[in-house]
Length: 554
Image (cartoon, rainbow, N blue to C red; front, side, top):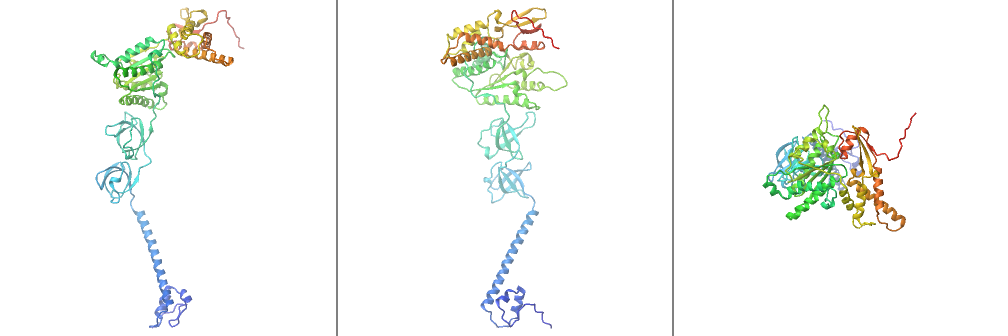
């Protein structure tokens, strides 16, 4: 039998190779050399150590290869494994059971023993394996839809929805919001499945014109409006302070009020004074100090180009007032320039905002209890432009006209603006009487407007016929400016004089010598509280002795 061919470089069985020669041998050659050695020959220590080191190296290489194979197998298994499902933890039903929402459906899931079910928090994201067992907690999600809170239920749950006419949902609070005080109108962020409220984002796009505290405006601080003040007190204060009497007589309590009249005559001031004095009267009668909530809105602020947005803001205004009323406050909703928001509806093919705004406002008014939670006050310079459905009894029950002040009223207003403590050359009552007398004088120098009627008759309006609280305030401010300028020039304080007031009176009316075109005469007269019937022309009174100037344009 032929002997196996000896590999090149292998030492002979009888020869004793050196360590350098053994290093050059492969593992198989080393085994062949050991097999061909003569029997009974002992290994030298160097040979034994070399063989041992070689075997240890082989074992280490095998271990490394085995670990690499295991990692590759784990990676392959991970790639082939089904995806885990992310859900929202809703409730713990026991030490090892949890209610989890996955993909919009609720599942009763087992909890991995390494995870304490009691340690999971409501609203937290969890991972579920293929068997729908909770295997990991991921913390709270940082994204999700934002919605507005419509109402807070008695047990703390939240009713949400963007549109009162559409479907609404009730959600629970997460562990992050369990102790927070959430009010209607607040915007919150939900989990991706819209089951749990996770975060308060902020207040929605509300109109914020709330006076933190209504200024102190006693009825004595309003001059020239005794008739309007008396009407407001009878219509508002009496039903609120004497409810038992009104109930005994089965007398209907007004729900809304309209203050209408020319601009600058104190409609907004009367609204603030009504809120302030009603609070003081209630405190004096019952001993309870209920704070007032005065929401002052101007009609154009609500108008919005986006369909439905203006209607949403109207609903939100009433919601804010009802919310404050439930908290015990005296809630006042004051809408200025109401004709721009609640104008008369018109028929036709084209959509007009008033066709939806007026019904929405009427629906909100019909839902109010008279003077028990919200007092609605409208102010307008053109009450004739407001839709009749708004002004009908049962909604706006009291229409209070705010007239221009007469001479006595102007005297009282001058006295209010010429406050005590101002450097005056004469007593303020004397200065107020002098200014009012001059302003309401029926003299040729005080003629202001000339009105021409269809019949050819002409009439003259004097400066006093167009008086208002705003004009009187501007006159007093001009007089103060003149006194300050004179004091600067003289280097000493120069008191305000009668001449300052009279000169300011002339300048104020001189700067307001602006009149409309003839085709706008009717609207302008209605705005200034005059009957435009049969008026064909309105213009300034030409100074006596003035000649007409004819200009030819080539």
